[in-house]
Image (cartoon, rainbow, N blue to C red; front, side):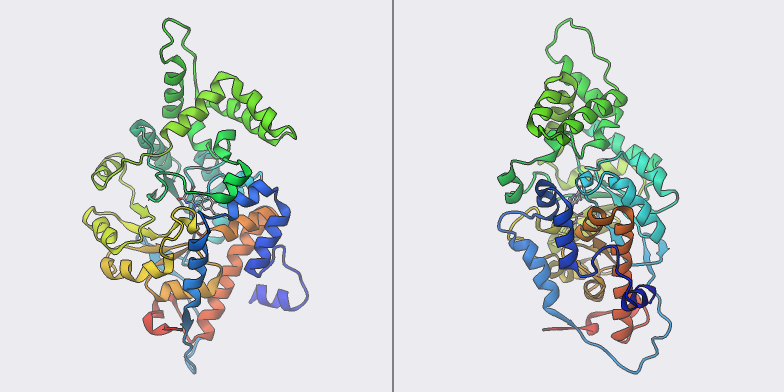
Length: 420
Ligand code: FNR
């Protein structure tokens, strides 16, 4: 009601409330390459459109004359009561939106009591974000690397940084066919962007050292440390920001350490050979709850249960991976049916406000992930922009719940909706 009253009494918000206007404001605030990377999807972007269309096919079916004066937005998730049903989905290379990057998002998330899923492709190391978040709830999202030493090290660091769960993203064992980025010739990782988790990692430093000494009979062994990697990559990144972008990057990459770091990253980033049986190793590396992100098929939901996972994230990566993939919300009911309430289900991809969240929760999601909108908020107004975007989601959720005749998330169910 605070947001609503301010809005109606002439106070203009820091970021547009309307999702399309928010995206347009981010486009205006950012260089073309950065916006293309954040906003784009795979191929014809059919899945991106399908994600939105799926929400439009459900109507909320309001009930009347039910006391809704007191409302409760809290949920139970991974054994803890959370004040809201939202989480912030992991977004890599978020330095493209704002220089404060993951640190600003972490502060905003902590201020609002919303769990933040720290990306494997973050722009700031998890230790730095954890410190900025204080006791704010964070999880770590892992891209399963081809190097198990690196995987185990990332997971160890996540535990030490106070992350409360590991989210393994399974839909990005290769990078999708991103037409906007291809047309601009833009892959941020080759400029040293979005690889801060790696350059802060001792196991990664080891891999880079091995690459530098490979076949180098008898030469001096370079001492590659996380500190050295971070400064080498900082040079590559500042090259990326100079007006002579390409020249700057090329100059930085002529020096062997940043080049070896980027090449090593490209080698080990993902493991397309990963199989269900490999999950057992993750269990050995950590005692934290394990969630699988990118589960869309009911048969995979069943297999996830067989492998004892602690939760799934129904997601098509915001339509950035398989163009033509089923809409995330359309995949939700099948997954809900197979999991039968035994483990939590988070839904993301296409959520653009509180009314969307009501639909996902009514269809059986335990919680809802916000993606691009918070990155746009960050681009437009930094940490305050992220806070405002999340608060708008919360305010609209609260209002929609009340106007539809419900007092709590727990009251939502299939009877809340009607297919339209
Ligand atoms: C992502 N997403 C993502 N997911 C993940 O597991 N690790 C990551 O590093 C990233 N990085 C990333 C970057 C950008 C620019 C975007 C837009 C998305 C996917 C993200 O977690 C989430 O699934 C989608 O953003 C949800 O779709 P919407 O709501 O953005 O449409």
